Length: 135
Image (cartoon, rainbow, N blue to C red):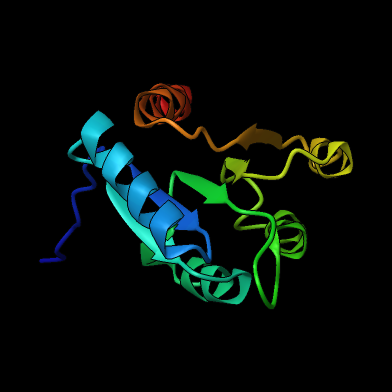
C-alpha cells in the first residue's frame, strides 16, 4: 500500500536578508504573530535560490531584502520570476531602502516594497498584514 503525505496548512516564510539582527527580529516577530509559522532563513540570494530549488523548502511567502553582498534582491527576484515553479510564490521586498528607483524596479514585477519599521510593535503590525495576505 502506498503511503501518502498529509499536508498541513502550516505557513512557511523564507526570510532572505544578510543582516543577522534584521533576520532575528523578523523571525521573532513572525513567531509572535503566528507561532505555527515555519521560518526559513537565507543570508544571500544564492542561498535563497538553492533552498527554493528543493520542493520541500518552498515557502508560502518570500521576504526579500534588496542590498545583500553577492546576489542582491533585484537579481534574486529576476531569477525567481523567471522560474516557472517559483514565479507564483508571493514576494514582498522588505528593506531599509527608500530609493524610489528600487520601488519602481520591483513594481514592474508586481512586487511591493515595504520599509522595515524601526519599532517592534510597528513590525508586528506589518508582519500581521503580510501573513493575512496569505490567508
